[in-house]
Length: 203
Image (cartoon, rainbow, N blue to C red; front, side, top):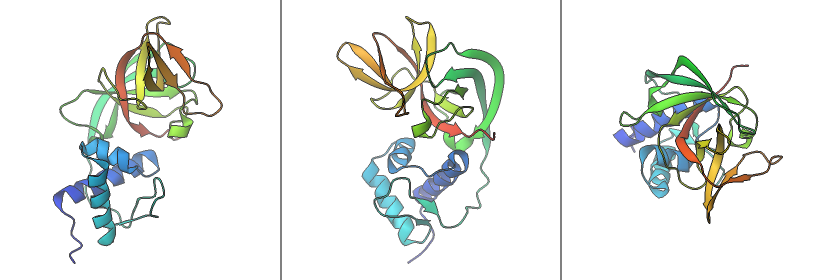
């Protein structure tokens, strides 16, 4: 059997390598599927083929267990996006606006969308791998699915925060990814984007 991946399988390998280099942990099947806008079973099939070809390894059934067996030789480009300031991953605080920019791996960016970055202050998202001082890459969009990590503006508090969002009857539930912190509810929020990547702080 040939060990050469198909075009889509090569794209998946590139995504996994960039994700691991950027986040310092492996992507889940759901994160790979979301990036390529395909179903999880489709990604599972590709990953199984890549394991069979000896290009990926991982324990069956374990979460975030996908590993590259050897580095890819691709030269990944970078894209410069605005670094708009600091956002709370804790209690809501006002975003601190700046006029900086930051280079991110081009694999994170789709040409048809607008992106920006925010530096994270706080620890409410640590169980999603987002720590104080990290930078999140955000796709500018007004809607996210239940359970997705969102940048949201809270009109009643005139503040911006980063949380997992759930819609309930007549209100919005904002959930931290930190077992020591409680969710809270808002009557109205404005979604300002979806988190699509994390750049780890070197500190």
